Image (cartoon, rainbow, N blue to C red; front, side, top):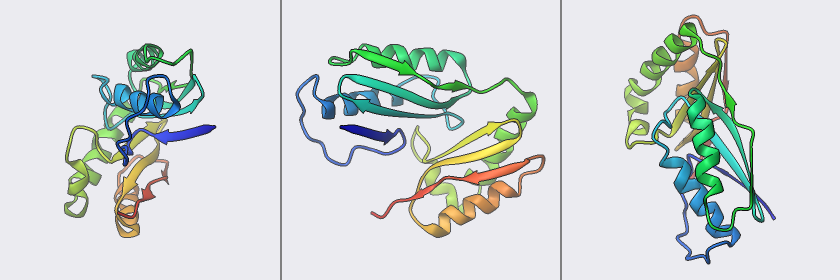
Length: 169
C-alpha cells in the first residue's frame, strides 16, 4: 500500500502502532523530518512509505537538510531503504531576497498571521529562479486566494504557483 503524506499535515489519529508497521513508519518519518534543525518555511519535504521503503522528495535550501533527512529516516526501526529525491535549490541572492519579501507579504498580512504560529509554518514558500510555489494547508478558499494575491504582489517574481490545499476542520 502506497501512502503519501505531506509534512505540514499533522497526524489526526494517534493510533499506537507496532514498530516496523507502515503506520508506525509514517508517524516516525513525519516526526523525524519535522524535528530537523534546519527545516524552515522555505523548505518543503514530502514522503511516501511503501512497506519498508521510504521515498523522500521536495525542495530544500540547505544541502545538509537533504542529507540529514535521509539519515534520520534510515535510522527508523522497520525502514530498510530510503530513496532521497529531495532537490537542493540553487544558491541565489535574488531568490533569497524574494524569499524574505514573500515571507513578509504573506505572514505579515493580518488575515494570514494565524498561519505563522508555531515552529513549522502552514504555508511553505519555495523559490527557484524567481518562480514561487506555495505549498501547505489553509483553512479556507479565501485564505488560499489571499495568499496567492499577496505572493503575486511581490516584485521580481516571474510566476506564482499556488498549491495550497484547503482543509476542512
